[in-house]
Length: 91
Image 1 (cartoon, rainbow, N blue to C red):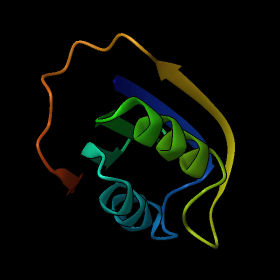
Image 2 (cartoon, rainbow, N blue to C red; image 1 turned 180 degrees about the vertical axis):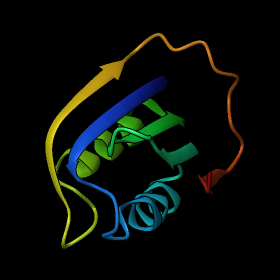
Image 3 (tube, rainbow, N blue to C red; image 1 turned 45 degrees about the vertical axis):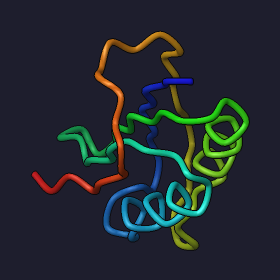
Image 4 (spheres, rainbow, N blue to C red; image 1 turned 45 degrees about the horizontal axis):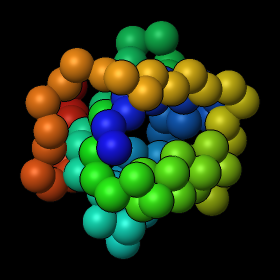
């Protein structure tokens, strides 16, 4: 299963990307996470369907203790190439 996701809320400056990577690694999900200029975070994720679904639920709850996701959007048919590890992208 492949998805892309954009989350908004308190998701920058609270270790959100780092904690998202930890969750992905624990679940065996691959992809990327990076900050957006508008204060949101962009995520690409692929892996086993159940793992990706659990990953989505964890991201919606905010994997960062000081974070807070107030809204999100998910694309279930993204066009990115499949990833083979999970990386935090620093831009």
